[in-house]
Length: 382
Image 1 (cartoon, one colour):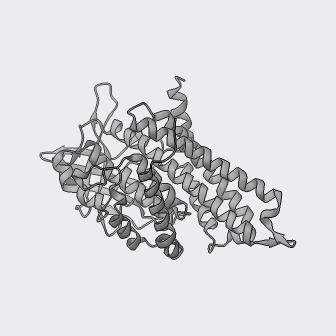
Image 2 (cartoon, helix red, strand yellow):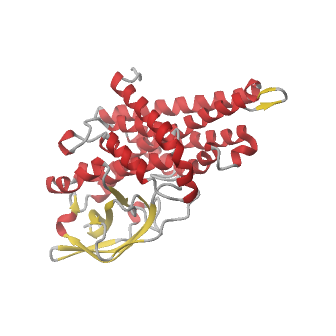
Image 3 (cartoon, one colour):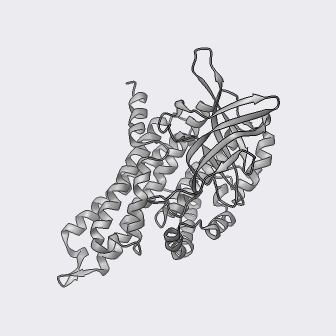
């Protein structure tokens, strides 16, 4: 087993690392403070080909795989999580469902712009009254002739209301199964469709430079051909998407955790107390050593999950472990980095304040920590 990167993977990582430091870092604090979306950063990521990393060249992609996406997410999140989650959601939740389950016509229509970064897409799963219980979906879609009529609402949907958002895919109840359970399907809803309303952006604790909205559907009509994948297979489809996405979120969390190490090392060398750098004190050394240990072990967890996925092996449990562990240690590292910075860690001008605010959602989004434990336990046969 060898977790060392290939020369090509190392080159990608270095390229994204340089981009994050030279392009993202100088502008992101202002976007974060003003709660504005970094369109100029997104455009440059598109030109770099980052939105096409795991997609085949047939649709304009880079011909890479999901692991290369994870490497890019980790490096972006070392500097800022808003930019990283924009890329992660655009790929794993926006373009990937169409890539995995779409017809050739749907792929030809939507993928080129999504893969180039010219357009973004959202994934409408979570609802205001239905969080972790995705099977409790209340949004409904009724087939009326050659159109789906959609009614309901979705909450916390990333990349759903930007100026370049082109569609959202939504899960909806489309009927009842013979055993009485809900039949769930996934439907593509283009932006601007009558009856589809995007609410104003949320006032969030973190991820302030990312785009997040509540969506409502009021007799929203789309063509019957906008069904994504097989009717009644929506639940299985989004479970597959979430399993993959958990590896990506783990990579993002590792990036945040490593960013906390980066900033703490810098501060510990520059900040003096009692006549010497605070990094000379064992209390600070031990904190930073523990932070590095956490980031390293979490990285190995997502590397393992990604390797199993790419090998075509079962990876649900490993993805859940990686997401659970990485999100937990991201919160731990953010707390310790803030403590090392003292009062300055509470000031928004320092990146660790942003890391602290961004870390908590990692234990909630794309499956809470409790859900990850459920997934692991069930996969163990409990």
